[in-house]
Length: 368
Image 1 (cartoon, rainbow, N blue to C red):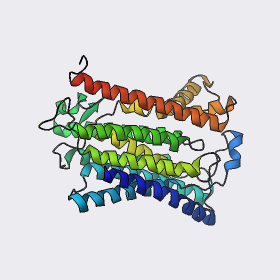
Image 2 (tube, rainbow, N blue to C red):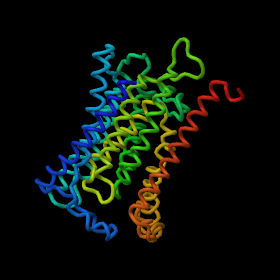
Image 3 (tube, rainbow, N blue to C red):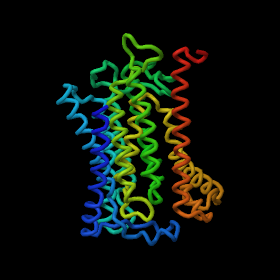
Image 4 (cartoon, rainbow, N blue to C red):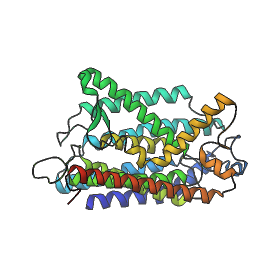
């Protein structure tokens, strides 16, 4: 519990102190955000707002977890787990792609940075590396960091092992690439209004922190009552999720409307990569669709808009992603953001109820 508190405090302090420092640095370098011309006209006043705020979010999570890991090692001799390292790798690697994209935008002073092909190639390389290492690296618990299959909660309902080990790894790599691309883009699409992505991500990571803590108290092994989870080092994952939630909270202080800084692709891709990694390592890939329900809605609204327009030449929404639709309906930016936070909170609550109900049912306590 002390390690968890240390991680929370360090992550929060780093963002609260580091964000205003970054704002001053970005101002001096004149690295301001360039706003899409086809977006809501009310957003044009945001042109020049400092960006690259995701750098502080990533550093806050890394330093928060690092301080927690140092305490656990010095006081209890606990060595950091590969599962934690891999989750942080997913966050940092996707954040690096976002940083390259953001940096290219501010240097070229336009709203186009890294090419789609370049970003896609980078995601493939990093996601593939994460997938392979998650299956082959040994862990302290004896359970692999990931399962070669697709899970709703815990045990895969589709196992890739039917095809043999080599093909199972290949299929798992493809699955992880899909998840990384899907979640990074979904979270990135939600980063269109002041505070929307940071606040929604904070809620989502609190949900995953609760799931990972529950799994750590019901880890498979001798003497466990009720259903047990064959998950590798969930307490480490809980600490990372808490650090991410606090990093988002600290950043939100400066990112709420009117934003003093934007997280940019550095932050949204990093948060999406971490969310995907947590879903994989807690064996809840399909439950994540509910936990991150708001991000799914944002992504699907964009897919529906583009697909329907190509097919018919007409639009379903006034503008996609869907948060812009409600802006053009007359909602203020603040109203859209707060209501979308509430929607994400409801998704997380439903996800946690399903997660707990699954444990009760599998433990045979349903009628107890």
